[in-house]
Image 1 (cartoon, one colour):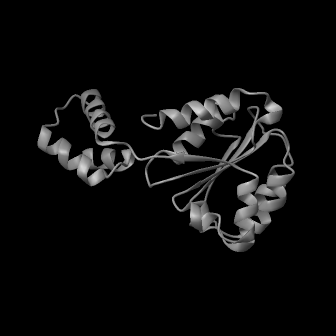
Image 2 (cartoon, rainbow, N blue to C red; image 1 turned 90 degrees about the vertical axis):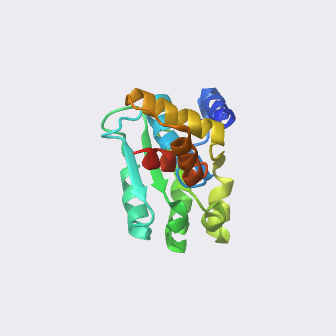
Length: 193
């Protein structure tokens, strides 16, 4: 993970403390392509020892935005993971959830088993926190802001990937990629490709 070093160190410190004090509900917010879902997956596998196949569930709230998805999650979280130590739910584009879906998340995020974690990822924190349900979810969550990369970091990323792929990127192309990417590592890599 490149960039957001202070946030990543804070996350490591948070999860290294007494397990009774670790939050089981987290909100990752920031611009598109800045690593919200990536860091959620890394925490799930590297820190919480969740198995990527059996105990990490990802839902995109642009497609699964209603109460039925939350019912499935609430039912699933009652059991232990088939493999790994934790059951992790990554809710991407969380701002796309309906009011009823956010309301349905209130009980599971309040009374969750020790092996269950929720990671809400959003590019629109204001929309996600809208309404009483959003405010209640905020009080149950630890919030982590993911910042866009600065031009130096973007350039370093692009050059590292180009070097690994064994091709050169001239200065004009590098500048054009950084302009198009506007701080987003994902956009920079797509432009490079």
